[in-house]
Image (cartoon, rainbow, N blue to C red):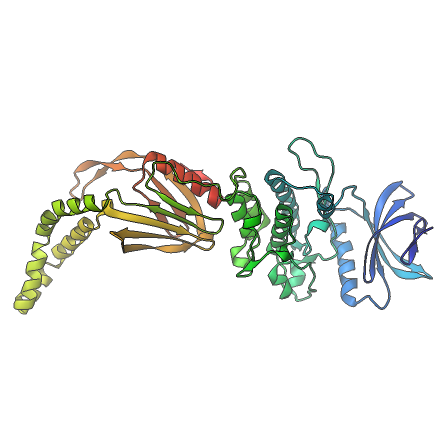
Length: 473
């Protein structure tokens, strides 16, 4: 028999479990593959050794793993089989018995040289998110806390476009949300994969999303997350990952260091993932041929500039042809200002007496002088905000405000059409609606006009892909 720490291969425990090989060893803990001689099935034995290395926290985690596995029933999670106390001359401790899964870990796949396509990464993400949905929707929610490549198994049986069967193992760090709220918390996890809030003594379901995102980044880049640069606390992976902009943006949301910017649930992350397009790697976006629109795009930022319909010289002719007519409409205002300066009493009397007419006139003048045909639109989106600015002859004339990007709920492509409307007098007229692309957040609407049908189609598709948001007609 071969020595495997304190135990030996071939040794039989409880007159039932025959040790075959050691799979892992940590201070105070050992993991073995064994044969259940009653069922003739392979099993996993997890041993917690009594001695100088064991602490009370280790015992709590070991006990919790058994309790959690006993409560779970999922095909992608090991099954609880048995627990017993071990009392041998050379070793005393507790043993947890669970089902054996015949599949190598993702870490082992990588060490064997396997790489993963974007489609395979998406399949892996979907499978793991479905497992997390099962765990997080328990009452109380179960947080794994140590999701990483070595704790994810992937079967070697793959065919066609199927990546293989995925399993999540090692629930030795698991924590219920209720225990976290009660303050009974042990900081566990693996550097590079652990969400920042866990180091502060807090683990929530979104913490597992961070770990999953970091795992996928490792698979996509071949580099450990801790080796990649950080900016504002976030892993910078886009330059070395051959992924579409939409997939990159999804991963960015997964590994946001701030909880309020991360997906708030595995279900939300899965829904967003299923809208991602995987066939356009970052950096392959081009300007639309024969278009005035300027597009600047990167994984973190996007800027769209829609120039005015008229160039500078056309604008000057446009202004000169309309200014005289429009200035006539301001004549009552000019006369009123003169009266206020020369004859204040009469001027104020007229101002008070005709205030409603004056406000109406001012409103009409403002509408006339907005010059929508001469405005340039500038849409800017980064990881956190959306903003839209109107510029007139290079000068910012209107800032339509900004909104948090996480509040973006809808992207629309408006087709050109006509509608029947009524003037203030009640007289009907036909209004022409021009092609447009509209972004709607919970509280604001950002509208890009001045587009041709072709430009609107292209811009809407580009935004849909980059934002990872389905397009509505």
